[in-house]
Amino acid sequence: RHERDDNIEANFQGLLLCTSTGVLSKGAGGTDVCMAIASKLACLDLQAAEATSEDDKQLIFELIERSGGFASMNACVRESIRHALLKVYSRFERDFSKLVDALSISGTSTSSSG
Image 1 (cartoon, rainbow, N blue to C red):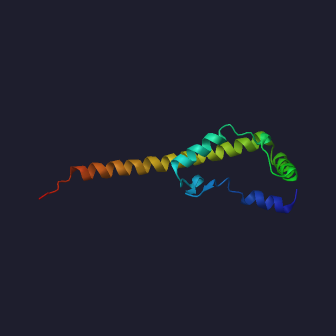
Image 2 (tube, rainbow, N blue to C red):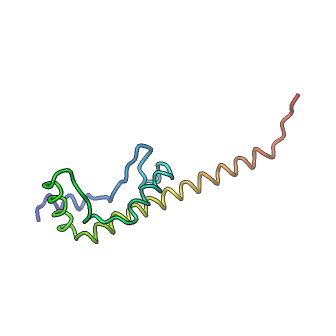
Image 3 (cartoon, helix red, strand yellow):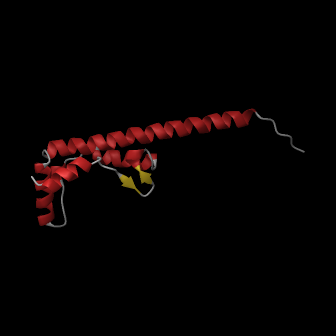
């Protein structure tokens, strides 16, 4: 182990899961995008992954093995998307409720038409 590896691990904040519409891990981004990604990652098996370069694949596999193995890394990725899914769901539910409330309030106001 190198000191650099210890620094990386100490600063690691988990997978951010960034999309063009926001960071899913922070509850931002589209619900449909998050669900599509979660659907793909639900059955993730990193050991079956491919790379454009065999050298890259070997390097990545070695890093995974040194970081606890494939089962551990698969679980980490799945837990990260699960956490993101719950964050996005919570934000969606809050925004949905606000909109329903706003529509209920505006539906009770009277308007005069000429």
